[in-house]
Length: 338
Image (cartoon, rainbow, N blue to C red; front, side, top):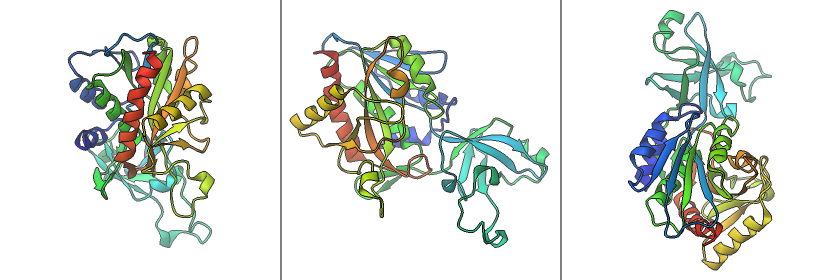
């Protein structure tokens, strides 16, 4: 399972460029699944379960990851850029990025010995940074990179300690891995599995997918912020790695139905599944678009806690991933009404 996650994370797919991830998922779908790709690029898969569902259930995870996009090439061959999705500028400085054609660039900024005293210690803004691809001038740079080209963090997937992994794109290739895993199992009831696009730039794919599927209930499988870090205030830790999947009651895009949240927590307790509450109202995910689709959808989000999210070195605990699988298996049957 970890090797599949390694493959998913290593594939590059900023918002709007999810093709490689989608192709990999399609190539690894069980033969008994029906699938189609819509106009935006969402992959919609239907799987029959042990029992015909009384309620239509949709599970969703997004394929895209954060990255950068080139906006200008200057006379000296340096690239200016903006971010695709939410990235804190501080995690960019000094990193290397990889373009789709394999070109590597270094994210640079003014060196410390040229900074004014007032600049020292301040996080640089994106407009103060540039990408150095080793070009001698604009013409040389344009041989490798064009305006509108996108790049991702150029980082390896590595095990970290006994239970954890470190990689780019854990948000939300962890969710994609969970969907792929469940698709290969005998699930309790019929369900739709949707691998969405363009979540990182405004939840754009999920709304159209939900409109097509028209589910009664939806479960979003996500990676969310774990701030269980030194000096973090207790109420701002959000969730803690190793304590199980985090279930949301509210974020900045969705107020989750209390009955669904309470039932998920009760199911976990009944079956001795370690779960926790996502305690801080922050962030947002595809649930924000799904619950407003069509005539409305009852939605729940189950998260894997990720440290250093939206960076090239996110960290997740595979025990939390196992917890997510356990509770989602039960929720499929529960929400399907079987």
